[in-house]
Image (cartoon, rainbow, N blue to C red; front, side):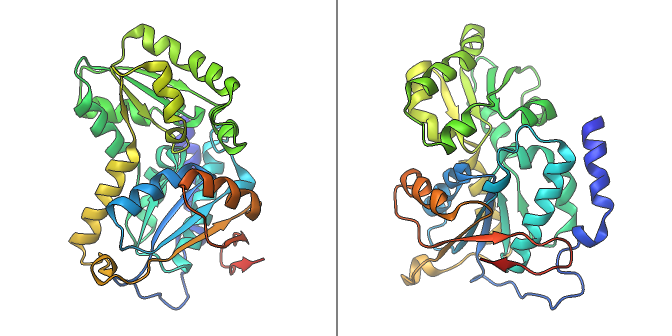
Amino acid sequence: MAEVSVARAVASDRVVAQAGEGRQQIKISASSPIGLFDSGVGGLSVLKEVMKQLPGEDAVYFADTARLPYGGRAPQEIVKFNYEILNFMVVQGVKLVIMACGTSSAIAYPIVKEHYKIPLVSLIEPGAAAAARESENGRIGVIATQATVDSGAYQRMIKKYKKDAEIHAAACPLFVPLIEGGFIDAEETKKVALQYLKPMLKAGIDTLVLGCTHYPHLLKVLREITGIKIKFVDPAEEAVSEAKKILNSKGLAASRALSGAKVNYNFFVSGSAGQFQDLGSRLLGRPLPSVKQIVLPKAGKRVYIK
């Protein structure tokens, strides 16, 4: 694909790709945190799943709110952003990163995954495998950002697991700004959702992949439109399950859940800390601890916390 070829050129910058090169190595252990990142609050749906499946794990969450949404950006921009965020995660000493962003998983993951020693978990393959498993009639819907749909990542991966699948993919560019604006239950959001889903329902899909981590926050609205016959696939569940397997296989699973020790969640944003804290607390269903606004470093530079 031409777009991916252009984006792959970014990988030639070895200074950016090799985060922490020439610095003192940060020792990773079972007590090290998990990293998660997204363009905004969407990835909190993945953090919810981490809290459920990995209750003993500390976590570092980064939201690139100054540059959201990612869905309409060029592939090379998305890859560049991912390198900057992953470099920051390495500095934070995380032992594994879940790319809690559908667009990053579709566009950047195939390019950046070989450039980091820590495991990176994408949402695409776990979500596609679950969709192929859940669908009975083989007609599967995928809703995601424009960049994710255009990449064909979900379409190709679903076909890998279900060769005869009939896939109906639709970009939903208004969902992210509506969610980030706090308009989750607004009538306008319901009208927009109906327009996006009409063609899929007409095509007779029985399974719908929520291909952007923002979209599970609209699950109530989507269920009202689709009814009980449609099965929803949230890739977060499968991705966190994959992360759990990796941690166990590497002997890096934390034991805090058994010991009763306090679990720490640290939140960082590139935009407004207050806005993220307010909306994030509502979506996560619990007050967020202090949220720090940061300036992501360029290659070879340190992280400055405001």
